[in-house]
Length: 117
Image (cartoon, rainbow, N blue to C red; front, side):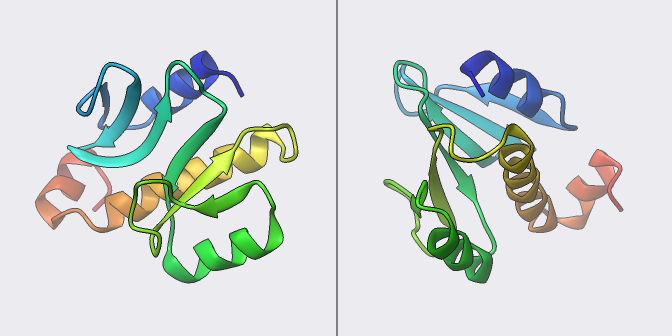
């Protein structure tokens, strides 16, 4: 998955915006103002995704391309190397999981605004 495919997929989700809150290289995707996906524009060979803590550990044990989140809370974030060892479908599933984890943590008012509740 290249950077344009990632952008298109993330931005197709309800309530998602993109920004560069840290520097001009780190592209961040947020749902209703909360981060769910980060990547580097200059080196888009990995992405950080939020993950349910037990699942995060399982993925790290099962897939060598999944490591604890770089510069993130390692309990809830994974860094996924996009090295061709996993399918685009699986990567999209993990992006969906990250998005859904963030949406589940939003206040009910924002979930209603998104059309979730």
